[in-house]
Length: 318
Image (cartoon, rainbow, N blue to C red):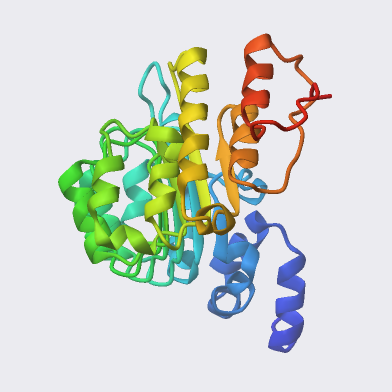
């Protein structure tokens, strides 16, 4: 292979599985250079998930070696439940994958999107991400230990998904004031955030918002955020009667609005499908029927009927 030109060698290397590419990388400085500068710059190596099939055959040593060589060129990285992969849950022994701190210490100077779904994520780790990921545009985290501290260090952030976190009011104000977010998802946050979003001028940039337990299914927020087009709401431990009552007050809010609000909102998502359908119809979005299965209970039929304008023909949903 030493006699072949670079294009031929790269073509051959591309057909090799990753475990064999790493062997070639260790075999020759030339192969390492071609892999690092050409082959591993292709999208499949720049957009990586720790669960990717190509990584599974690697030993821990090869796995670490690959990330050390490629992290600076990565643009998207998805990290899932690292602790369960890095340690034996009973004996605490190291297994075939490094722990979460390994990833956070890497040079991710070109990383644009980072998703860390690990309950051990904390504020100190967010600070490390802010220092090592200067180009980050999208961050997704899910951990009760994340309070929003150090988030403002991610100066280019446009999308923040922090589900099941503990984002505190003071840090949320900083995030909305100092970052140019267009997408914010605080679903199942452990602190109430609706009032803070309503009062903050920076929230007016939001185009997509995810929130739990908001008044009137978030329509109050949608009415106050001029750029909002997608609303994602979720409710837990709310009685059917409370949901029915809130659907009625939500309809009255929309009927009393100036008229531009229903046209501006383009998409509504909800963790209760039948409520989602009702909200879509209340907002005047493209009508679609609730799913055929499972069979509707009487309460869910009432929700469907409540979404109909007063005086309209209330036919039973299919």
